Structures are given as C-alpha cells and as structure tokens.
Image (cartoon, rainbow, N blue to C red; front, side, top):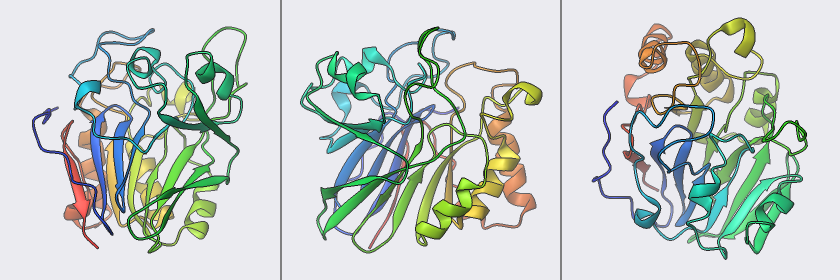
Amino acid sequence: MPVDAAAPLPEPAAGTLGITWLGHASALLWVDGVTVLVDPVLSSGIPGAARRLTPPGRTVEQLPHLDAVLLSHDHYDHLDVRTLGRLSRRTRVLAGLNTGPFLRARGFTDVTELDWWESVTLPGRSGPVSVEFVPARHWSRRTATDTCRRLWGGWVVTGADGRAVYHAGDTATGPFLHRIAGRHRRLEIAALPVGAYRPRSLLRTVHMDPTEAVRAAETLRARRMVPVHWGTFVLSGEPVLEPIEQTRREWRRTGRDRADLWDLPIGGSRVLGP
C-alpha cells in the first residue's frame, strides 16, 4: 500500500479530467478546472475501527482550493467531523437529503441537499460543470436513532464536453448502474469501492467485492476504473491486500487493457487531457 503524498497535485485546467486518491474513499476529482473533494476522511482514525493503516494522501493543510466538498453518506468512514472541522465553514458542501441540519449545526453556511438524480452546476473553464447525486445500494446511520434518515448516493461530475468522472461512494451492485450508464454515456473514470466485503453473507447487500466492482465498470461502460475503499481501515474480514490483488486478477481475467486500471497509490493522481 504505497503512499505518494509528496507527488504534485494536478493543476486545474480547461478540458482536463482527473482524480487523486487520498485513501479509503477520499478523493479529489478534477473536471475542467473544477476541483471537488469527495468523502474527506483525513484524520488519524475513525470510531469503530483501528487507527489508519496508511497516512492520508494529503493533510487538510495541503489540499488545493476546493470548489465544493461532496459527501456520499453519513457513515464515519465517509463523513469525518474532525476533517470537516478543519475546513473553512464557507466551503460549499453538497450532500444527500436531510444532511443539511447536521452540517449547518457544525457551522457550514453553504450547504445544498440533493435527491437522487438532482444536480447543481459549478463554473468550469469551458462551461458549466454538472455535479449530479446518483443512487447507491447502501444505507446511513451515525447513532442508534437515525438509521436511514439521511440519503446516501454517489456522484457524477460532468464537464461541458460531456466527459464525466463517477465516484460511487459506498455501494453494493444493483440495477441503478444501468441507469447511470444510460444517463452518462461518456464516463471516462469510475472510482469504485473494492473492499470491506467479507463475510459475504452479511455485506453483499451494502458493499461490492472486487469481481462485482470490475463488472460494474463494464456495466457503466467506464473507460477507466480507480479502485477505492481499501487499504486504509480494517472494517471487515478479508486480508488487507486482497481487494486490490483480486481486482487486478479480475481485470486481467476479463481481458481489459491493463493501462485502464488506475490502481493508484494513496496520494497518487492520474489526469486525462482535452
């Protein structure tokens, strides 16, 4: 699990798409000069898990200017109040329905709640960049009394040229993937979760395993896949390196071009030009 925290970050530029993996599900997405941060968990540990196995790809202080923070759902390994508490309270935050009160109570003043298939636009270098909240097969809870009160989902960020980056958040597989593919015909990069899947009898309805993640990339017709949600916290029963090793084997088995599996080190980035 190499960590490349010293690698330079991409420069926001017109017509480019890219991703920087910061560990677990945390990532920076770069679309036509717009920079968004997804599920930032950059602190030393989370409730319910041991401390991090690997340091984050960036500290909060090393983050670039952010046009928005995107939150997939409220689980502690995706919504970390210690990380959020170190961001400017003027940062724009996008999240699922009913997450607004939680964020506003912590001082954030620019919060937008979205239902599935709703979107907002951000000003890109070449035109509007769409940020759409899309379904996921998962759930939400932070306490014993708020199960599934806040909506969960993934994000599709699309440039003016129609090319898009998909971040699935946390999800099992499901028919919603076909609908995402139908709405977004030019998914160039898909960040898909590949870890936290054993025991299967317990977790198959909330988390993909590596085989399902590779199959999801095919269903989405995504040109490139970035495996995330592994190598950072011990949340389930599989060996720590099994998710990425199995993802590589499955990618090879399906005959897809090895260059299109972007198995980044933590802190690593890849960018596509115009």
